[in-house]
Image 1: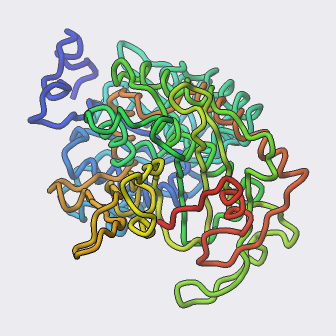
Image 2 (image 1 turned 180 degrees about the vertical axis):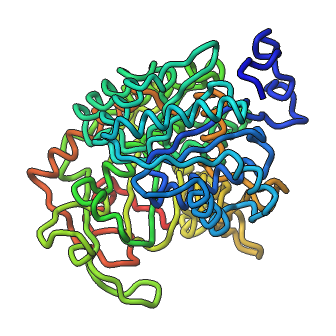
Length: 517
């Protein structure tokens, strides 16, 4: 291959395979490569590398795609290829195919070095240039920072010093940042300043993998592509909204990251507040990134905290006990956790949104580890009907109508409403009507990282939050975590339960109960 760009690129001709109006063919990334920092970590091994392989298997990456790993290990390109092969054979969604891997293998490179090693970044520059010449990546390179945030300044500084951040001749350079986006508002701003010194704001892609989940995107379709839901999606009909993210596992090997961060910063600040914004937002003018982000930002800016944080928030920490037929350790006895740690493994809070649509409708958020089962869902619970024609005994077993959006693992939507029980008596009970992706579509939902990596390579940013959303989220959470640090120690809860008693008391004060997922 020559060093000259492809004729179509030089002429600026559109790629017929990338027309968003054409549903016959999927959108395919153009010539490009990715440099991955933190390639030997769990996230890369279990999620990122399999996602890149699955995209290759589905034909969504160009045959010439290049992947460069950067790390401290003394690996050759072949050593790195074996590591990638082992990772994708164990964790790929589409199944391992030797011919597909061989296609990917041709673009695999590895650079040994530390983040402060200037010579290693010079070698990285040479490797990237070699991919441009031999693989035809066209000067289009993405840098994936799957590393601790405190390493960002070094890496971004090295990328800037070596010129890797600067595109040439119509090419692009992008950086992908994994959460956490700081640990409070001040650190989020410092982090952003560091990154934007090296990359333009429009070239920074902040990954919240929840936004890549099929069901999260379906919130927009459910609301705005149908006529039956939006007229009742407001305070006139909705009693409250519950957003739950529960895990049935402990912290595993993440003690170094998790302790001091906690569930509120780890989950609520990004994942759950994004789900809240999508649930509560007004209809955007278009689904372009600017319009979609503007509506989400309006919601986050309108969020109001409860006056009494002690009564309307809860935090907990799991103790030891039995779960799933095995005995599990308490949080304070997990490997790497100090015996006096006050980091919460469960967090819950009430938030209100000061808009005309949602005035008087509380949003209850909860997240935790070692809970009853792994589930993420959004439950929109409606007000009770007046029941004027019915006797009180007719509706004694009837609850509140609800629309439940199941984000994971069983993706779908459930509607709960009342129906007459067959028989001679008028008796009304709750029934459900269920939509499940697996039963209604032959297509399998891609992993969130597949969708997000492809969108980043395409330069399609709607599913990536921008800095303003990050800052607004921290403005919501910071007062709560500061209050907790001074006034509220985590309450204990049993493994396999649904959190501490304080969380249930929080809803009981409002005359409500948590939904059991």
